Length: 197
Image (cartoon, rainbow, N blue to C red; front, side):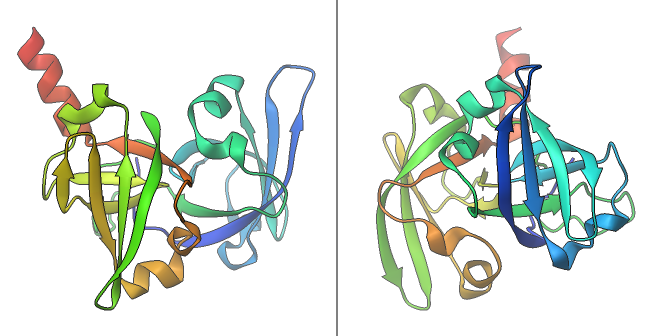
């Protein structure tokens, strides 16, 4: 489980297809001290829950399935792409964001970017089938960042990125046409399932 509070950003150093059909993804991140990671621990990469399979002093390896690449923006990234990183939350830590599972629901596309005071306002377009999960002042994880939805118009919504978030995540790389990973509020999905039953 994650909270959507990004710890650091890392850099993809390699994405290669293995004989097993999976993809080896090597990520460099000196500031998180990957040599202290445990093999088998979970880490969110742009909001995607992946498992550490190998590690070095400045990098860690993980495996991604074809399914993961087909449903996320990981397939859009290549060597030297910058990604958001968050290690799984500790039971005794503060819950700063919202419940994030690391299981991406869908990708969305940036449709508009504009200044809003000291913040930056981003508009995103999503598949209409996911409209039911977006509400004003509701939570959403975008590339793993826990954010609050400000406004919803049909199948588009907007969020504001404050300077701190812009400086410490990859959000400042988003531009019109950028593809982002989206994870909708887990509680909304559970409520939907219970109502259906």
